[in-house]
Each structure stands twice: as structure tokens, then as C-alpha cells.
Image: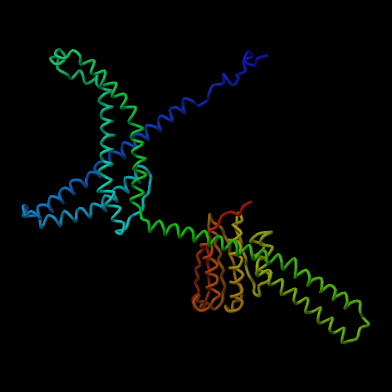
Length: 426
């Protein structure tokens, strides 16, 4: 049975929701775009034509000076030339305002070294663009006058209507031209705006500034890649040591322990060698564990920054109060930097600060991970006096972080590290 006969709307009969609203929205956007384009074109005419009278005045003063016809030429020519030079920069700022306010396009502020391109735009390209802008504005006037021609007929005197019986025919032609112009205005204005958007940024730009921006961007990307590569290499070494050399040492220590416990009838000299080898194996395992933790602790990857810092605080040689408030995990590189900053700071406190306690606070507010390490030591820490504090600053700067240190003589010492971070990929 056909579903349409049962009153169920099929694909062909279902009304298109929001079609009228979408059409009104499109018309509103088209009107707003047309107003913006016409405002952009209209403001461009005086800016592009201002150079013409200045150029003519400077030329007149120069010719008058050569021919001796103008007594004031020696004084007027320097003024005219100064205005010509100044106008190039003033008009550039005016064009920057025009593009920014009307089209939302930000152009860089140009240096004096870019004067050649500025003068080329304002003195050569500008007048040509002004002719096109005047043509578009004339098209607008023709559209307005033509579509309203019958309203203007009532202003004609009766004698003119009597003498020109065919004025209605000409009015019809004018109205048709006005309607055609009305439809031609939006594409013409839009095409001219697009043309100026191609020409102006190409000439009113600073190649040196753009090159520096590209260089900074490339260096930032390469540095981030180098940091990620170094972190990945540390993880690989940590895995290799943990799964390779450390397991061999553990197996050797177990075998030596079994030999020491079971081989009781050995000579004392042999028993002493086994005991010494067993002790050396256990010490090697402990040193390797410390080395692995120094490279990249596995608990940092598995559980995050809070458990990893808890392990650091537990192993510290002085009491450490730890507070970690991180709603979500940051990127692995940022986690690693925060961990090693705290680790090296606690090591420096234990060695040099003569402190009795320390406090570590890690918080995240928005896109900033803040690490604060405080101790009650003697103070007087100076980053320029040793490599430890400089290393902390370099670790922070590797991810565009900030490092601050307050360490007056007598203490306390407060180290603050702020790291920009993103949420870790889930």
C-alpha cells in the first residue's frame, strides 16, 4: 500500500523546515556583504586619489623651478616633496585601518625600508584602483537613478512633457538600464574588493618581518620535535635498561643468593667471593634503578605526575610536603619537565640549602601548569653561580615555560616554574 494514502508524509511531501528562515538569513548576509563592499570601495576613492594633486603640485613646483617662472618654487618644492614622502606612510596607515575595520584583514606595520613598495602602491596602483572604484560608484548611482526614474518624472515641467512625447519610452530604457545595473553592482563591488585584497597585501607587506615570523615558527616546531625526540629516546633507554640489563642483574643476584644458601661446604675463600658478588649485584641493581628513574620513571607514564612526585617526596632525604591539584593530565613532554624540575630542585635543596623541610605545590589553572618548590634553608641561591639552577631554567624554557627564583639571604627560597600545557591525548 502506498504510504502517502495513509497520511504519512513521504520524502516528496515532507516540508523543508527552516527554508524561509534560511532564505532570509542569506539575504541578510548578502545585504551586509554589499554594504561592507560599497563602504570599502567608497573609502578607497579619496585614499587612492589623494596622491594625484600632491603629485601634480610637486611636478608644477619642479617645472617652475627649472624654468624660473615661480618665485616660490625654491620654498614650495621641498614642502611638496616632504608631503609626498609623508603621504606614502600616512596613506599606508589609512589603508591598514581600512582593511582592518571594514574587512577584518590585519596588515603588518611597514618599516621605512619598505618605502619603495608603499610608493609604488600609492602613486601607481592607487590611481588605477580609484578609477575602478569610481566606475563601481557610478554604477551604483545609475542603478539608483534608473530604478527610480518614474519618480523623477513628476519633477519635469509640463512644457517638457508636451514637447517630448516620447520621454516615457526613454524612461523605460533608463529603468531597464537601472535594473541591470542594480543586479551588476554586487558582483562588480565584490570583484573589486577581492582584487584589492590580492594587490594591497602583496605590496604593503614586510618581507623581512614575514621571514622572521616563518623562521620563528620553524624553530619553534623544530625545538618541539627535538624535545619530543629526546623524551622518546629517554623512554626507549629506560625500557631497554629495565627489560634487559636490569633483568640480567636480578637473575644473577638470585642465582648468587641460591648458591650462597645451598653451597655450605665450600671453602671460606669461595664463600667470601660469592657473598661479595651477591652484594655487588644488589648494589648494581639499586644503582641501575636510580639511573632508570633519572632517565624517565615508568610510573610517570603509567599513573601520571601525582604518583611520580609522591615517590620523589618519599625518597627525599628531608621531609617534603606535597600538594598536587591537576584536573587533567598535561602533555607527556610537560609532565616530564615538571617531574625533573621537582627532582632536581629537591636534590639541590638536600645538597646546598641546609633546609629542614621542603614544600612542593603543583597546580593547573587553564593552560598553565604551575610548579612551586619552597624550602626553609639559608637562601642566597644564585642561578649564575652554578649549573643546577640554570639547568632548571633551561628545562622550563624547552617547552616555552617561565622560571622565577626568590632566594634572599637567610631564606626562604621559593622557585616558581610555569609551563604552558595541553591536555594529554586520550
